[in-house]
Each structure stands twice: as C-alpha cells, then as structure tokens.
Length: 456
Ligand code: PXG
Image (cartoon, rainbow, N blue to C red; front, side):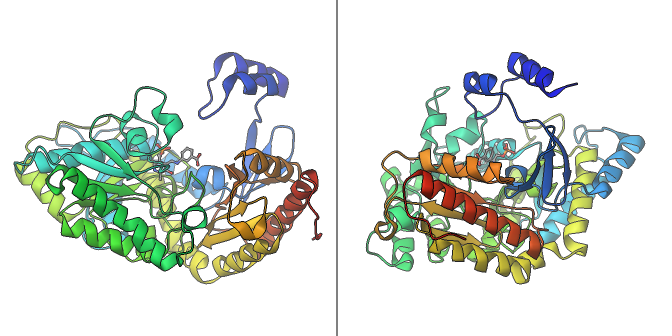
C-alpha cells in the first residue's frame, strides 16, 4: 500500500498515544518499516539512527532473528496457556527463576503483566493488600514524585506526577501523594549536588511525617527519571531515601522500566545508585521491546505475607506470564548475557559514549550534559552560565529534534532536554556518527535562534 494511502487510513482510524491527533492527521504519520542494529528505515526510504531505542526499550538493537525464532517455536508448540487454575507453562517458570537470579537481594518473586503500567497497577493493589492483611488497612498511601512517570493506566498515571495526565480523567485516585523530584540543575541553587541530594530526599521524610508514618505504605520512584528529561539524582539521594523508608517501615519501590536490563551499565538502576528496593517494576528491556511484557517483582518478606496471610489473590491478567512473551524474554536475556551487552555499556562503549556526550557540554546552547551508562540528556539553555531554562519551555527542544531528524537521527526532546537512550549494542563508529549529528543539530538550532556557532 502506498504511503499516502496508509497515512490517510491512519488519520481516519488510528488515535495515537501522547499526540495532538488533529495536528498529526494534517501532517501525516511517519511509517517505520524495517530495523537493523541501531538503525530504522521509514517507508519513504530514510535511514535513521535511533538514539532513543524505540521508546527506551530496544536494548539489544533491532533485527535479532533469534527472538523471532524463539517466538515462532513457542507459538508452534503451545501458543497460549495461562497461569490461572493451578497451571503455568515452562518458559514462564524459567523466566521467573531467571529474573530472580538477575535481580539483587531477595527480589525473588515475579507477577507478570503486559506492560510497565500494568505492573505498577499490580504493585499498588498488592502493596495495599500487604498492609491490610497485617491489620494496617489505613497504611494505604503511596508517595511518588511530581513529573515522575509510572505509566498511563489509572494507577500508573496517578503514581506518576505529570500534571497534564492528571488533568485528563480525574487523577490521581485517592491516597496517592507526590513530592518534588531531585533536579539539581534547575532546583539545586548554590548547594553542591551531594548536599542537594540529601535535601531532596528529605522531602520524603517531611511528607511521611505530615501524612503520618502509619498511613504511608510505600514510596515509588524511577532510579533515573526518564520521560521528564533524564533527571540523574546525586549519588547521595537514593541511599537517603532508603534510610528514610526503613526508618518508617515504608516499602521502597524502584520503577526500573527504563533503568532495568543494562541501561545504566548495571543490570538495574538501583544497583548503580547502591540501594535495595523491596519491589521492582520491569518492562521494556525485559524483552528489548520485541514483544509486550512487564513484571512486578516482590521480595521474600512481601511474598511470604501475600502467600501465607493474603488468601486467594484476586488479581490477574489473561496474558500474565504469556508463554510466547516469556520465551522471547528468555532469549533476550540470553543474548544480553552471552554477548556481555550490559558489560559493554559499563566498561567499553558506555564510557566512550559518556566521554563524547559530556564533551557536547561545550556547545553554547548546552547548559548541562549528563549521562549514566547509556542514558543521558543535554539541557538546552538561553544563557549558558545561568542554569535557567528558556522562558517558553519546549520550543527550542523541538527545533533541535527536527533538525536531528533531517540529518537522519532520531533524538527525543522533553521540554528543552534532548534525551539519549540508544540500543546498548551501539558501536564506536555509530557513536561518532551520533555525536557528529547532534553537534550539527545544535549548531543549526543555535543559528536559527540567532546565536553564534563555533562549528563542528
Ligand atoms: N514506568 C516507567 C519508568 C516508564 O518509563 C512505564 C512505567 C510504563 O510502561 P508501559 O509499558 O506501560 O508504557 C514507563 C513507560 C516518554 C514515554 O514519553 C515513556 C514511557 C512510555 C511512553 C512514553 O518518554 N515509559
């Protein structure tokens, strides 16, 4: 079918997520048709370096035939069976055990879902159930962060702190509260990042004391806040959050949907920051986005209470632990392990990408260049030394993103943060191409804004 016809059908019948659908219908959708390694091709034949790994998820890169083969094999043998009625399937069990082996500490128990959003819905319900069956039904408040992202379902969007999402559909649901996120660049003032990290973490303690420790069930946070702009907290932040959670017996939930499966150079972001969650949310990198799958992971303490005191679990999805998804996830993890892809992100191509990314901080438009492992951001600013954002946020980021696209680079913008999250398999020469194209996009953006440009 020709592109124009597809675009017309798309405009007539397809509502796109997180889009102005009226504007998109006029402009026409970009239709992607093929992927190989770090590149995707659109149906107009443009080859694009995907610096965003789809949507933070294609960790092993595009086009790995082994995952297709694993899906085909499982579909042919047993395309579907559920984990209800005392049943399950072999890949589902193997995957639960594999995840227990990979995750730190005693996060040994997986409840499977189809996405990160659903996994967070599961967590909200089971956390409240956990306290209720221990005669603490009032301990039902979960605290998240403003501008955090935990998904688009009712619970996910409530736990997240995106005001635009709360405005649609009457969110958040009751007994969800938020604290300000840790973002030193705009919020740290004269404090050192380390001091600021402690100050930002202690906002949780103030909130717990304000609400009453006997009311607060859990705290949820992304180790690095992704969607809002890759906010990398100072190293002091998470250990202090952990200390506060332990002090008041508040469960600590790490939403590892973006950070998990190697993004930070460790298997999980909580390992990078040196804290141990009680509960973890995973999705995206679990299957490298090849097939939808998420999971909520619980530690021994929680699983024991749920099993021994929780009664029958009144919760489950038709596709919880779907055997085809589990088979694909197992193959994805095999590739991550056998090809040492997470190690690459930590010790080889990761440090090279970091060095080159940080050097972009020299550009006059860039107020801060930040990166951990293979996830980073450039903060575009009007006045380099001032650590202030543009008066109208988001306009310059879009200009830069559009220039990047013209140069054959998919680069995501949130506000005026340019976001980086490439496949972890990106090579040195591909990193060179990426950096060169970003520098050119920054130059073109600066020129459009009437700023002097130093050239590549
Ligand atoms: N938690 C985190 C930390 C996420 O980044 C979810 C949960 C929800 O996962 P699902 O699989 O339900 O989408 C996510 C998803 C963006 C963007 O604009 C980010 C996500 C999803 C959509 C858009 O960066 N992350």
